[in-house]
Image 1 (tube, rainbow, N blue to C red):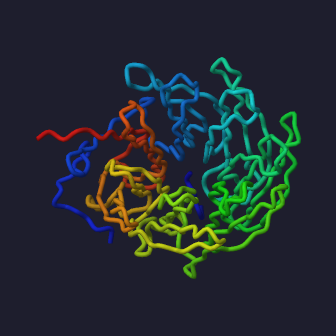
Image 2: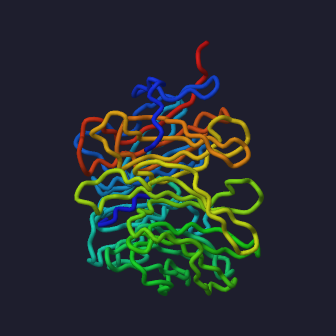
Image 3: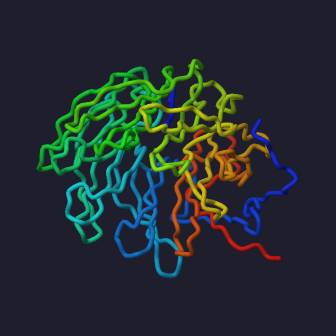
Length: 412
């Protein structure tokens, strides 16, 4: 998910990386291929989500195209490629999409966070939308929340234990904002309540942090706050809020967060990035940008660990890139110094198995990458990567829209 606020990576130049060939890890190489619609102009693909939307056994990619204000579906086909189609047009400023069976009818719906406008605004133009799957590859638009602060994230879970899915929305107006709990009361009706009025919330991942059987969530609050809040659920949809991490640097630039069991100890941690710089007259790198994780200690406490630097870092994900059984961290860069050809656009921090991470540069281009996800598209046990380009500021010479990155065997 892109967070547009108002809205030195170690460069391994000796690798000789080119646009189509990525780093070598042991006996592997990676290669990029464009996928989906032919494009022209300057793409604004702000989120991608990998899932088998039609449940045909082939993974698909759902895209938030903020340039065209639409949600698209790059459908996996038997031949190994993708056929992209528009699922819903006239979705203003789509920022994030979740794939979930919201109505319990055994098909997958789309839960969309609509900012209204991507660039900073306090206008109440945001909305929470559901694209309800009718089961015949068509989708009906349902509006859950509208005329509200720009919505940057929306997640679904049964918070009150009544058997249906409620929603959490993160909203980043500009100087205003909110975190809202939307209780599902049936018949596509949701009752909203405000849990926080802080500006700048960009991600709200859901996880059972304390293992008590009910679902909690965390909120990454950017803007001048630069904090992570934990909202602990009492099992009835009532939440207590506490800050579990904060930065004294008001320009820290939080830019992405997800819950995952990074250390594989049985509980979920929080992996997050800081790399946003759109509120500067000249967007670009900052020396404090990078990746980090909060280790869940299982007793209600979290321990901060710095993973490493990445200028303009966005949307880190956990992927076992080298097939050694532990989880590595892949991230993209949006706000780097793109006038320099050695500015890095995607990296992997390789886990040594003891939670120390070693930097590998994956690519120098295309530039301005924001969206990132992964999935095993060909069923070989190795995840591919999917990226989306967001080209809102120059230079515009190394652009992309939607790409898949495949790992293959290196020739001897």
